[in-house]
Length: 332
Image (tube, rainbow, N blue to C red):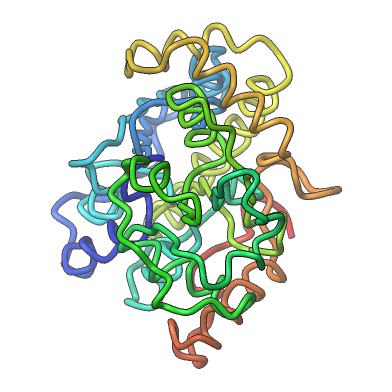
């Protein structure tokens, strides 16, 4: 799993994000000059970023007048902080909690597109233990990271009546899960199931939270209010090119994009990339919104996410969820 791809990175950035920026926001370029866009991802290069790499490799960004640099994430990279200090023009938001946290703190950053209509978060359980659906995990130990306890665990408790005494510390090591057949653990549908099966020979039961009704988005493009106001054309161009990139990465030839991914992150072997891409397709992670274009968001989905979180006390009910996003670039 992409370590700490959750609201912990947002919380660490709030003080920086609320302070004055040290640099001017990017302004519209002179006619004929490409707009430089540095796009910070939420983790090291991987298939889960494939659409952006595809748009870069195929020239989709360049054809729209953008000079895009993908700034690879990792354990020391804080996307909200990079945005707040204007070290990058655009960044990746891993999940809806990150974006809503920024809105709650009054940070001038918004989601402008969501390229994963389904959050790829899953719970994994052992086969042959009587666990056939998520509800069957009530009373079982569940391995969760600290950040996850204040994120999707809130939804799980509300929906299934799970309790905090089920939580066990998850340190991104599958050994405790493998040692206890009653245990479940968090993961990404594109990552942990394959890794566990390949390394331990165990094919876990996989429960994609999105297919159970979890309403959060993932892999969002984040922009500062300043960039949205000063250069909306560049934001629109980036969103449109990225949509083409995602379409082509999943349904066309991913070779060029995978080459760029492997250049940035040599740990991504061809088999890992291929299985992750197939999971993105088979689970319809990217194109799961019927009748909507890639990257689309809706007021209804954001409201549904907010209502669940606010009902559990994560956010005050007086917070306007529309402060977290704009539909200006993805349709309504």
